[in-house]
Amino acid sequence: MSAFDSAHGNGAGAGPDLEEMLSQMFGMGSGMPPGFAGPGPRRSSKGDDEEHSYQVTLEDLYRGKSTKFASTKNVICSHCKGSGGKEKAKAKQCASCHGKGSKQGLRSIGPGLVTQETVICASCKGKGSIYAQKDKCKKCKGERVTEARKVLEIYIPRGSKEGDKIVLEGEADQVPDQEPGDIIFGLVQTEHETFKRAGADLLAEIEITLGESLCGFSRVVVKHLDGRGLHIEHPQPEACVLEPGQVIKVVGEGMPHKKSEFKGDLYLVVKVKFPEYEWLENKQVLAKLKELLPTPETHIQADVVDDVNYDETASLDQFGASAEGDEGWVDDDEEEGEPQCAQQ
Image 1: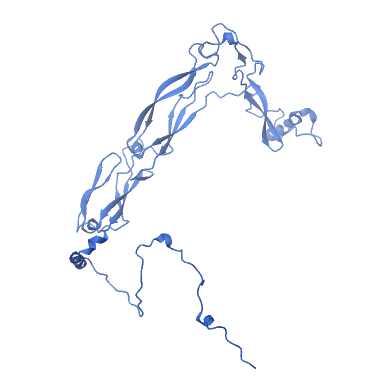
Image 2: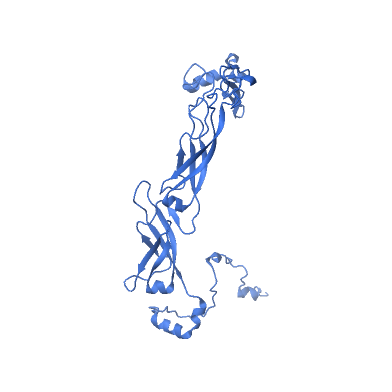
């Protein structure tokens, strides 16, 4: 390609000169910027990491969890020690890459632009040499690695959260002449039916009856993530009346902090369950209840009062759905017709 041939110059109609481009970009006369490798592939000293998602419950994150699993991975062949050949056998130069272990290729980087890059030779896998079929290791068949099964253990500390990484160092596939990569698990929390989490705090909803709201109660209101029942003493007349949507904070009953004995707080949102309609059919009970409950302090005064009908099954989902403007409205004057002009 002329774009990479500096002998073509940079005249009109000629492709861009790579040497000149690199010199302008990196301030140097040679074709390679600082830090670029010379001939041959640049292989990392560490193998690739393996990343996986791992689902956990909120209970797992609250109490901590340790679990074991079996893993199958590539390990350096124990018979040939990763050479791929029999003992005393000699490898021959790879004919595909001519012993370099790498090959040059072109990769598109934009419309009309390509770049030259070095890739690992697929024939010799970067070694630069290969064994004849008869000289290959009988155990790994010249692949230099074999499969092995190993039991690994994941430990999730209490107080962990979604997105945390659990790293098993050096447990990824082994590659000859490289340090093994890591197996990395990203925690994904499943939704909980009772609790919601924000940082180290927990949120839950508790349901109480109308009688408990007015008269108080003493009972277990929620079962915590570790199985404990949380008991609340709310006596009357010392305590206040609990209203729907009111929030109670229980200090120190949230999620534990990592590597600490401290915990967040638990927020309980009160939901008041009102009695069913049939409960009001007892007129004596209803009359007695009216005597006991407070009456409105003031009545709204108005010069004109209309009796209106209502729908007690309505929902705020319908709010704003009524038609706007004056569609369908007819002026009384329009019904009578336009005024006629007087005859002269």
